[in-house]
Structure formats: C-alpha cells, structure tokens
Amino acid sequence: MTFLRKLPAPNRSCLSPRLSLKVWNTPAPHHLRTITTTRDPEGQTRNRVAIVTGAARGIGRAIAHRLAKDGYNITVSDLPSLQYQLNSLVSELTSAGDGKTKVHAQPADVTSPSDVASLINSSASVLGSLDTMVANAGIAQVKPLLDLTPADFSRMFDVNVAGVQNCFQAAAKQMITQKIPEASEIRGKLIAAASIVAFKPFALLGHYSASKWAVRGLCQVYAMELARHKITVNAYAPGIVDTKMWELIDEGLAEREGKEKGEMIRKYSDQLIALGRTSVPEDVARLVSFLGSEDADYITGQTYIVDGGIIFT
Image (cartoon, rainbow, N blue to C red; front, side):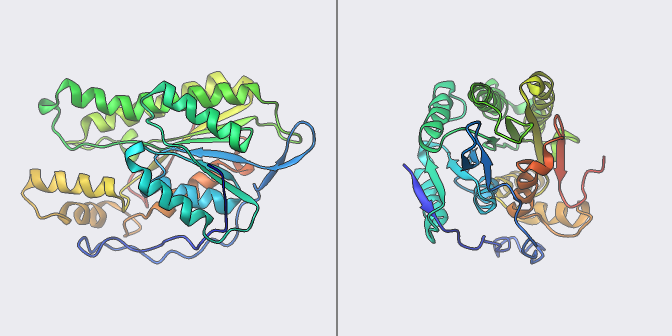
C-alpha cells in the first residue's frame, strides 16, 4: 500500500492519569532536520526512505511521526496482530496529505527472516532505495533469573537480538546493492533499539538486560564490518518511558514488591531521573531523528542514552 500524507501535530499527551507521573510539556522543536531529499546516482532528487519496525505504538510510533516530519518516505511495520494500530498510524500520517511524502505499511514478525526479507523487498518496490533502517521492535518481561524457563529466555533473545540481526542483515544487503547517493559519503544507516539496561542492568529484568547488552555489542560489530560499505550503525538507549511496555514492567515490579500499580515507576522516576520527569516517546524520536540525519554521518558504533539523567557515561 502507498499513501500520501500531511502530518498532524505529534501527540504530546502526558502519562495516563492512573500513573500520575511528572511529565513536562516539552516545547516543539525549533526546526526540522534538513534530510528531506537526496540525489540518486543519476542525479535525480528523491525523498529519503526509512523503515521503522515496532511502529504500531509507543516509541516506534513516535519515531515514524518524527521521521515523516523530517521528510522521509516511510515504511511502517509491526506484527500482523497489530494491523489495526498500524492502519491507524497510516491514517495519522496521511490525514493532512501534502502530496509529497509517501507512507507504506507492511506487517512483519522480526523473528522471521523471511518476513523481514519481504518487508525490505516490499519497501524497496514501493518507495525505492532504502536509506535508514530503524530496528525498534522489542519485548520485555519481569521475572527473576531463577524462575526463567528456556522458552522465556529464547523468546527474549529471538525478538530483541535476532530481530535486530534479521533487520540489519536484510537492510544492509539491500543497501549494498544500491549506489551511494550523489554528494554523500554514506550509503545507509542502521539504527537499533537498545536501553539503559545495556549499560546497567535492572534486577528482575535480567534476560531483558542481557538482550540489550547484546544489541549494543551487535551494533559495534556491524559498525566495524559495514564501514567499508559506507553504512553507519548506531543504537538509542531509552530510560523510563511512558509506553505500554513500561506499564507492563511497572505492573510486574509492583506485584513482586507488593505495591500498587504505578508505584514502582513513580519511585524510579522520582529517585533516579535527574531531570525530574518521566520520558515521553518523542524524547527518543528526536534522538533517532539526529542519528538518521546527515549531522550524524561521521558517527558509527555508538549507543546513545536518552534517559533524562539516570545513567552517566
């Protein structure tokens, strides 16, 4: 499917009332990044193209909104079971329609190499050369290491690590077949979702923490191997973010500690975040916007923390 879009203002709503956390009203960005177009090897101007996985909700949805506002043509993807949310995202991105930016939807399970291959091929067929792959899809689970089953551990690594591997491998192979755009030194960008637990793990999130450490390492090796192809590889490491995933983490931690739902995330936000508020998905999307821009062309192999001041490096 191909859609034209005019973008609504991003949703900057605060956390759900039941959590009652501190979220500042963040100001609108002063400018959008100059990444709207590039020239292909034949000298023709075209919009850059990005794929965002895990785009149906949360951070992935915010990333899709931001990259579309930056001027990317976008393929948004998520599990087939989230098709309704994916369709609503497409509607949001196309509701105003300026006739210039295209949005394409393609469901995929990132644990399936064949699904990911179909995603890459579908995007290339509809939108053209791939410039940026955002491997955002991921899962979390609250469970002590001594209680983990082999299935728990395998599932976490299948989605969070193998999912990134599948997306990066297929996207890199596609990018390598493409010529470097005119007046550019970079052929493409691979960007993955890590986490602050890739720097300091959380108890009861052991296998999740380990999976994000693996993502951080995987990005470093990809950066080493793909530099000769002029492909950069980086990751973003969110902290405590107002998303469904963190609601589930909060619920699991609260149950273990005998607390009410919402108490643990309030505790972590109040005690750990230097800037004094819980993050919103748009905070993360701004960082991805930078990593996907020409401003980040000389950056590779890095994992950037965006957590309001929890982890200091």
